Image (tube, rainbow, N blue to C red):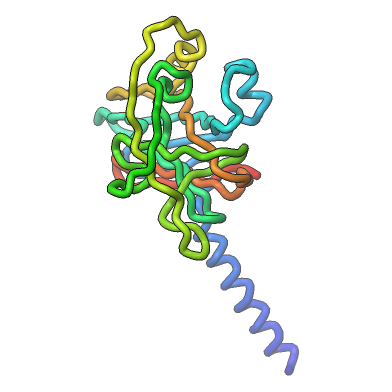
Length: 211
């Protein structure tokens, strides 16, 4: 093989590599025609600063900032967000503060009629890690589906108050809004394997996190 041929093959390989790199999701910031979104994962120290030792270690906390790019009001809703693991195809929808702090007690039972992420259901998993379930896991094994039954507790709950105060607001905005979203962990997934997806505000958006 001549030097010229080797150079041509090297250029082709570089072109393919760059093309693949271009398909990667942006890191911690993305935008569409309506909003600019930034997001970052809170580490253990940051979670401790926000909530002390009272927050369950299986909860993944993401700080999200949404900046409208037009004068059109934007409706924020936690239901538009999804935390996805690109390592094993799992996903997790955000929890309401009451589902974490006990203001709304969740009794979760297997539900064959609803998928993970159904409107009133939340998957329940054990172990410390990051992620949730998108489609099926490797080998065709799917995480069990759950149906949640809620009951409310009127007792004072400082953690619940803190979670509500710091949560990304669910409202129409015309200016920048920032807050936290709370997800359930599933397995031991590294931050670099996670993606945050947003739909319902213009074109669908997705980003990944710093390792």
